[in-house]
Structures are given as structure tokens and as C-alpha cells.
Image (cartoon, rainbow, N blue to C red; front, side, top):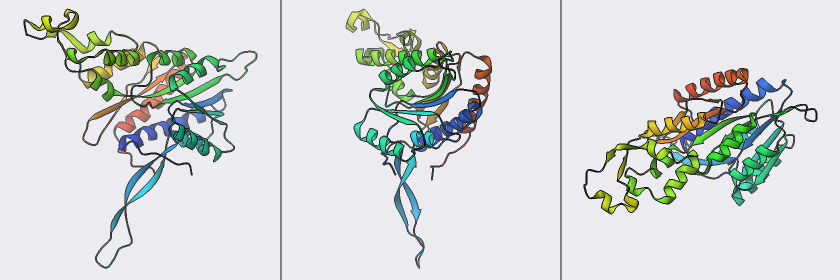
Length: 314
């Protein structure tokens, strides 16, 4: 079995449960629609992860003894490879050398599945794939292509311009694990602590510098009469007024600007309630029937995910 690496928590099981349910729906609903069905994983990792699970040994005279056992848990790549009905093509992108090697070994376990591994930077790989794939039906390409893409980035890796390319295909359903806590941390409470690097990172992921006026209220300036003398460029010290909910709402607004449909996200949290990610679902097809069906199914899956506790996979 292909090796895994350590990451994630209970929220990882929740996002994978959502993905697994949608992939099963997608291939079942479209298998007789004369499309080639693709699954694209832009940050595929190693195909699985390792977790420590508490198990009980056989009971002794004075009771059972518990111990930690290392367990392999399937990741998104293996879930896609095991989806039934199967995809016609699975494309797995990973930059890390060791994880890429594990992906290659994983695909070898499924010789009957057309799976392609690609090592490289995710944004560049996605853009090249979006521009080179024959998405639409033509006289030469009678089938056309429909795809599900899973964006589970390392940090704030997905650029908004990459999302524009995905939306322009009009053929991809996207599950995007947006790094909510990353943006929240980069958007410092005090505007004075917004370094050029932090500004650039947030602008890159949201596709516009206008987030700054949305996150920092214009009427929330420092009361220090001499503050402007200390500010580089004469800018006043602004305080961030946007909380987690406001930031998440703004992200959805940005996605709405390029995708025909974006579902309300599922917020993933630590056990203590700390927000980590927002799991968005977006449809790039402008077809009302396609949007209606995908929205109905995705909303049901997201709603069930928000109200359930998903246990680690066995």
C-alpha cells in the first residue's frame, strides 16, 4: 500500500467524506451523458495519511490495556481511484518529490484506471490543463469533458487568476478548501502591521486589492492626533473590522464574481471551535439544469456535513 504522511484532524475526515459523496454522485449522474469524466487533484499529496488511533488490547486479569496504533487513512487521490462508476481520467498533481513518488506507487495499484501523475507547481499545472483540454463537444471531439477538481492547497497557494481559468472552462465542478484562518492571520488587526508581503498574499488569493477597504473600516481610525506623523506615506492606522464571518462572506462574493454558482461554504474547525477552512463548492457550467442538479446535491452534502460528526475512516 502506498505510504502516507501525517496531517489534518477530524476536519480532514469531514472534507473527504463530502468529496467522496460528491464523486459518487458525479460519475453516476453523468456516466450516460456522452462526456469523458475527469477528476483533477491539484494538491494530491501522497494519496493517504497516517493517524494514531487508540485501540484496546485483549483484556488482562485486571482489565484491558489501551495503546496507540498507527493507521493508514485513504486520502482524496485513493478515494477518486476507488470511485464507482469510475472516472475516464484521473489527474494527480503534486510538487513534493516523496509524495509524488507515493502517488505513482498508488496509481500502480489500480491498473484498470486511467490515472496520470504530474509533478509541478499547482497553479501552473491547472492553467495548462484548463487551456489544453478539449472541454466542449466539437466535430473532432464528440464527447467533450466534464470534471471535478479538488483544491486542497498548502497554505494560501491558489491564486485567484487560477480560479478564473477554471471558471472559463465552463466544464468543471470545484471543491475549494479555502484557507480562512490563513487570511484571518495575514489580515493583521492593525493596518500598520499589514506588511507588503501580507498585502500581496491576500491580494493574490482574492484577486483584488479592494479587500483592504472591505476589511478595514474607514471610520475606525486611531484617535492619536500624531499618528499620521508616524505612518509611512501618511496613511492612518486602521483597525480590522471584518471578523471571520465577514471575511468568509467576502470570499464568497469574490467567487460569485467568476462562477455561475457558488454554494454557501461548510466551515471546518478544530475541536475547540477555532475556524480553519471554508469548504466552497462552485459550478463553472452556465447551464441552468447542470447548476440546479449540482447545487441540489452539493447543498445536501454540505448541510449533512455541518450537522454530523464524521469519524476517522477505517
